[in-house]
Length: 149
Length: 108
Image 1: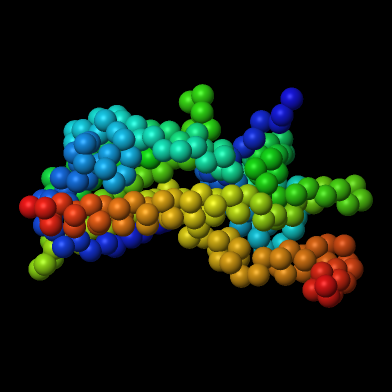
Image 2 (image 1 turned 90 degrees about the horizontal axis):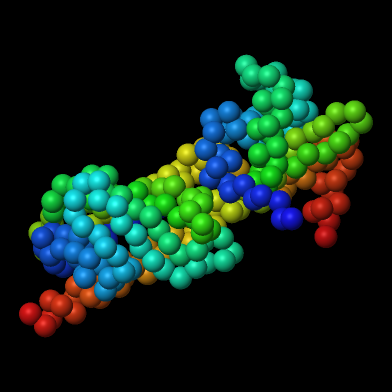
């Protein structure tokens, strides 16, 4: 999961306007035909990113909307020709603060695995782990060889 | 013809395949040993293994008469790349929103 807490000096009403008015969204996020209506389908367009096979189109649908408090939309993208390979959810939450607004952004749908042990493994010296396994498998001292260089 | 790529989200979207990855994160297993953990037919297990293989999560080594499934880094790396990509993306956009709001406030 990707999560950001961002503080703005403006009121929740003002921040909300910038999250839900298509002309304003276009000025900081991307061009869109967003409408603050439950079930409304819209798109965002950004530059393609070839290393991830991403054509730059993001397909969205408003899943939840609670004025000045919460906005949820689906966030799907793919490599083109209607093929979707990222199927995620974007959630915005606004919390009124004394001198402004705390905006919470959660981008979820990646987390199934990232919360799991596998993710920890990945961050804890995977290479060593794999070489130990390979070493066991082939019953050789592979680990010494790989760590030796 | 280029082989049909399987994206990592699709590969880990299935609970059985996630369970397979968890088992393989502990030790490498033959397809038969892996299959013992699941209430499904051997061809069904092979199909899942093939998807994990194609998406880069595992490699398959023939050792003797057995096929061993070994966890591989590539698939995980790609998932992480997506997360990194959007993480960066949102950081930039939120900063832009902040600048925009401050700029508008000044003009009012």
